[in-house]
Length: 137
Ligand SMILES: [Zn+2]
Image (cartoon, rainbow, N blue to C red):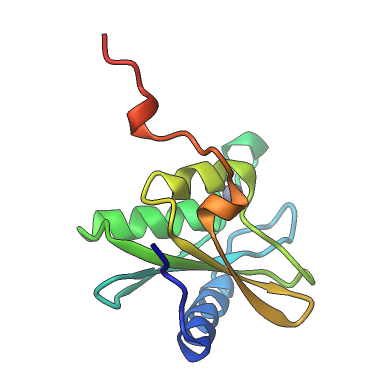
């Protein structure tokens, strides 16, 4: 199972994440993040990080983007791009698990020192937890 994108597709998705980043709400950290989900029917759903004065309530861009996709009835996620101004930034651990829910083959697109990198979520989260592990009593 590979969901790897062609270079032009990856660039396009990353640009969508970058566009979203402009709307980030990060008054405390100033660490703006944009994310863009690509579905198998080629729709794109964006998200940004949303901070809160009660810091722990902050939500990451990746989870907002996935929520946007799910809200619009689209669960068939192929890839998700993440954009920040850092030289390299990958999804946090919580987001890795959140993404994994929708398939171990989902491709993560991110920038690493000027190079657009693609890795599957299973590569970024080995042995991720999934519904098959739930004990049904
Ligand atoms: Zn996160």
